Length: 239
Length: 150
Image 1 (tube, rainbow over the protein chains, first blue to last red):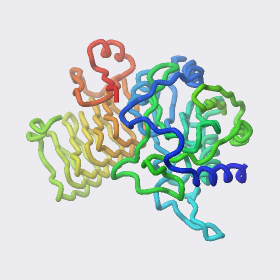
Image 2: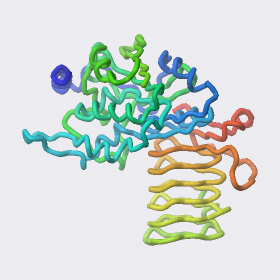
Image 3: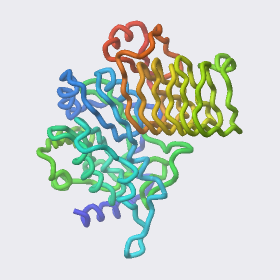
Image 4: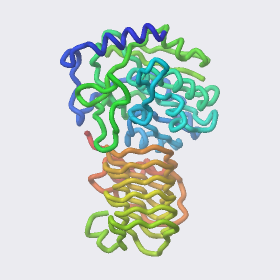
């Protein structure tokens, strides 16, 4: 899988920054229906107090939505955390890479089987390749057996300059998408070449096909795909 | 908590560094550095835009405009402004988070707080207010929960 994704990354990094989809202004939000969220909402609205981890950009809307349902909500912006320059190290070939062990020592530090739900959003598409597999492995550890993870993956048609959005939950099957801009004074710089887009946001790192996604989550019990019209596949994975 | 209100607070200026246990029975505005613990039972704490707090905080109300590393227990209400950078868990009865705030940790909304206090009306500039699930429906009707369109 690594060689295939590496090819996609090379393709993306050589593309023109002016080509492809233009992001909407950061202040604007786009409405989006989510079949994955709709399915997840059955669990969210079951009445049982749940433990939910949101690894996207801090969203007040998500915290509000989840806490109003009586759930304990954890927030951790992993994409932003992956830009910490302290993670940069050199591999045996002298190439600059991110230290995944250090990343996992500083992030996603929770007891085993802590969470009922993990909201992963589009993290895997925009995170540095070296971190994706270790992070998914850590997800497996911190999700309870039977717990769920919701993730979004771009299709190839989305193009290399697909803007990185954050997702706000506004209803049981409704999301609002908002373009992510770099945090002023908080982001410490790109974690590696090609990690950040020229616009200041994050850049799509690769495209996973269905087989790659199944391989990525092969330790999980089941995986369900939801096809959408906006070049994104929603994936609901059960631990 | 606006400037007029905080002018009545005890102030820790931005050049002040305090290490140790900080406790009191009046409202406190921290724009400097505090390391240790902050105990203000029944009173409010405001961490100003220059404030850097590395401490567990226990207060009635906590407003964060600067940086906090530590757990926050606000018996009544917590407000995270857009400049807030918080690493730690928050246990409170009500929380308001402005878009742009950075938060890493847990939010635990408690149905019953240790102190009995009347509901606090949301500030109009705050984008989101979440409150205890049991009372959420009634509060929504009274304009307690706000969500801007941006």
